[in-house]
Structures are given as structure tokens and as C-alpha cells.
Image (cartoon, one colour):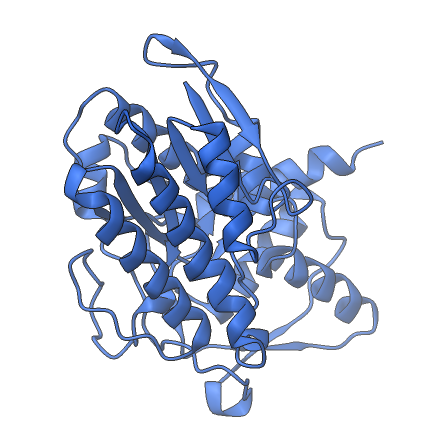
Length: 310
């Protein structure tokens, strides 16, 4: 089974490659992993041509423009990567004569406004606050409108993604804990935005589970939600990173963390105040359960500890 993976050099792309199964059902997996050098997602025509030529059984679109604040200054580029690229790949799959090609589109909790105050189920209406969320929502609509009539497109929304590699909140906080503690300074982190951190390790497993189940003919809803279990603010996450970093020896000491409000830390893009995802239906459909976010965080930090050993 041939799977085209986009965003192979990113944090999720690396986790997907590391956890790729040898077989999907009774077929060996042929994973075609592409980064920006092989496939520029800012070029819709190139995406369409690549899929037409490769004719994959699956497109696993893990590539995205994720710089939330920068997207406000580069809306055309964000739209090209997050909307026009998946739309082009879906159109190319639809044109393939055998009707077998499917697409898994990774998306985000930022398609929601955060005003609901309770976890968002997959069927909740989207209401993005900024360019990033709006372009991801447009990408969702495009692939579902093109391929879902044949149950060939799936959207998997997730939240607050981090992992042992790449640029993410966890790695940034570990660096800040290290630097601020050495200078005997504290760090301030927003405490009034609530969601759930999601490890790339668990998210990658959920992606492969979804592909395996859909490939075997198992019925799946078109939109699914996946995050680790529990809820946290960015402040809670930053404190836990320091605690577990120190406990595992990744940090020699942790810096004090001071809770602040969103108003005290203004950013170009508005962010949802409450973007917890209701993953109940996804857990039932895939037959798997996520770890609590602190347990998943410990796994990620332990991965870092192993990699940093001489």
C-alpha cells in the first residue's frame, strides 16, 4: 500500500515515519515521505502533479503552515499551504480512475472560537478567530467536498501538538527553564487559555490506526478529534514541563513559572480561550484510548533524555 506523507521533516512527520507499520492489513507499506524539498505545499500545481504521477492509496497530509502569528502577516502563503495544497491533492485523487485513493487531512482546534466553554465534538460549527484557523478550516472543507461523497477523505483535528523533535512549546519551555533558572529568573506563561497538549508519539499512532481501519473497510466518520486526555492551561503545561524535566534529569533545575492573562501577553493572532476537543467518538471508532497528557509528556521528555545521553 503506497502512502504519500507530506511534512516529513516536521515533528509529526518524523513521528509518523518512526512509527510506520511494516504492513497495512495484508499489504506491505510503501511510504513515500516528502518534505519541502521534494514537494512544496505552497505550489498547488506541483501538489496536483505529484499526486497524479504517484497515484498513492493514501495521502497523509501532515504538512502545514503552523506559524499562528506570522500567518496574520502572510495570509496568502498560509492559505496556499493549508487550503489550496490539500484541495489540489484531493482533486488529483478524485481524478484517478480506480477511485481508491484516500486522504487524511490533519487539522487543528484553532478552527473553533473557544467561546463554547465545553469540549468541542467533531460536528461543532467552526468559527476560527484568525488566519491560521481560517485556512485550516478551508482546507477541511475542500477535501471533504471533493472526496467525502465516496468516503475517501478524513479530517483529524488535534491540539497543542509537541514532541521530542522540532520547534514546539515543550522544547521551548525546557530551554527557557534552563536559561531562566541559571539566571535566577522566572518565566511568565498564559494561564487563561485552556486546551490539551498532544504528543506526536500518540498522534502518529492514531493516524496509522485510522488509515489501517479505513483501509480494511471499517466505517469511520469524516471528521474525528484526537488529543491526549485531560485538560490544561499553557501555564499548567509549562509547570509540568519543568517538573518532569527536572525529575528525568533533562533539567538541572526548573525556573519559577508565573501565571499571566492573555491580555498581559498580546499577540498578533487571537487564540481560542477554551479549545478542548471531545474525542469520545474517535476513541470508539478507532478502538484506542489516549494517555493522560502528563503521562504522554513524561514519555516525550524521556525520549529527549535518551537522545541527549553521550
